[in-house]
Image 1 (cartoon, helix red, strand yellow):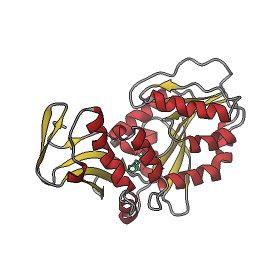
Image 2 (tube, rainbow, N blue to C red; image 1 turned 180 degrees about the vertical axis):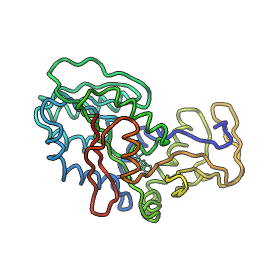
Image 3 (tube, protein in one colour; image 1 turned 90 degrees about the vertical axis):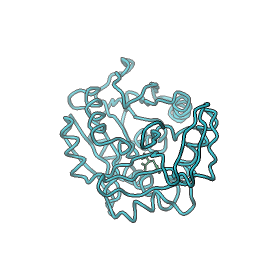
Length: 296
Ligand code: AVJ
């Protein structure tokens, strides 16, 4: 907030209310990524199971996508275990407990870590592991700058051994009208999701943002191949955050999210550069979303 371009990292969207609003975004007509990725997983989970084989340790980055991982848990034969990795301990423990209920024989190993930072997997020896699969759904990788995305892929590669793999959902480049609609839904759920950040700062950092003096702004930046989300100050104003004043000019913005879009070839090049083989890619008939199966 002290930079010339004020900015807040998108990971801060996901407090309790923000996570609820995100779940609602996934249901709106204009937001195609979630339902398209679920459709791809349903259609191709048998092919994925074939590629992965038995005694797989399924590692998931994030633990918010229970509906998606369930499709894999149902399809993969004789799993060695399921290891969700999430920075939010509370959220992860709840999600893991729910999964453990539905899959009583499944060995769930919850890891509290930030997968964007360098970290190691905990030693695991309860059951024989024949294959490790990192599942990174939702095009969450799109939140990272391409350079950071390559770093994450390289870091992920270090967690794997020869023959292991990564299954990663990536949103595709497409008609900007479709992208702009997806981040400006008519019901205003995405706007509420964006503005919730200010509510969160008010509550957690003792600030006095007036939400009626900011509005949601999202647009596709064609030069950068990314959706940008901002909160725009509707007037000149000063906001106090934990006793520190922050000045806003009229129309000044807080940059709250980037969501990069890639062509299939661009993402495969990035994966190759990070040391993966792009073994398989699945996409829907409208080429909205891609699911990449990478191996090392
Ligand atoms: C969770 C990062 C994939 O970029 O589409 C949805 C978040 N932001 N609507 C995305 C989001 C606004 C989402 N990711």
